[in-house]
Length: 307
Figure 1: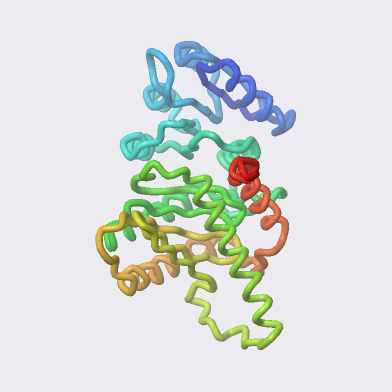
Figure 2: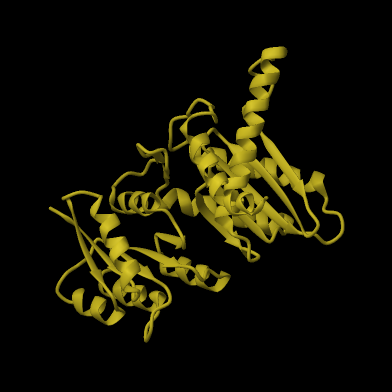
């Protein structure tokens, strides 16, 4: 039986782009694309979608209201919310409603495809798709959000997020501070790739014992102190990392932040490793090429400006 995916967006151009992208899931998926919440509500009277993907900002009824109405009629339908206008309030409303994923525009088509596959699968495991994008089920995502929220309570960062080494945001809590999160995670992922390559070079000169770093400690840690913000990051296994960002208000207590980050690392590692096989560490595979491509996109405009 075909899985039924309903896509709702009032922008006809975006709607057709999403529809064409989701067709790439294959014949086992039925894609219905509608350009208004009213049409969507009429559609679900006679048909039950397995997954609804809705934009947030639409006339007459926003995405939260639409998904709430669909949830009341079909409680087990999975829901994904898309928006270019993310805020703490919207994320909180999405959480309360039990929305499966919250996607910030712009996003890659492959991200949407993997989220759709994950939402409609029965898997309870963390897995990596064939193109290297992590698929994390909602149970694990909820646990990750809980850990990140606890870290925010303990050390008060403005933002805490988890991403993968390909430069994709998986989840974030707190205020984005107006930061382009996609650019942020690409840069942090790039810093891990750089540190990994330095590690390889140093290891050639003076090989070290592989167990020198305890398994309950992150292998790589980065810290950036800026004029307005401080940014701390640590890897979790070979595929993931988490980052916290503080507004700069005098000197932040680096030792205290690191103490709580170590605890957060262990908790996140437990979530990941109890539901997935541990993947050998290698940050210099195809994911590095993805990061390099993103670097090129980020800085291409600056490069072309130079004489």
